[in-house]
Image (cartoon, rainbow, N blue to C red; front, side, top):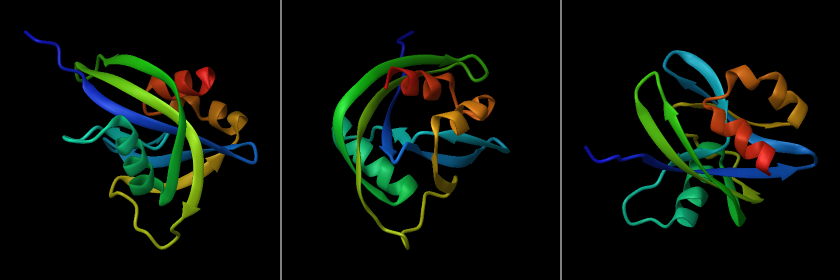
Length: 133
């Protein structure tokens, strides 16, 4: 059997001491994540992180650097993920732009506020990315 991880991208954007996060509803529960999503056919990783950040937060994101590459296996559904996390800058906000269906809202949270919600993170990769940043 060939191992086929889901390739995903994530964005870390910080402004005035707060990080851009999304509050989303997955499997009947509310969780927090960086703006993140799957790489689509024909996209580069940079194009994917720009698109996903815009779709999930209505912020135009300019990636500046690769924070890291992360691998995680979800034992609940036996799915593996390979995440490419970028750091960058939010350069413009489209307030009226609708967000992806599963996204409840985009929020700016301090590291302390994120750590207090650590049990509500979508995966362990969220905190791992922030620690590496």
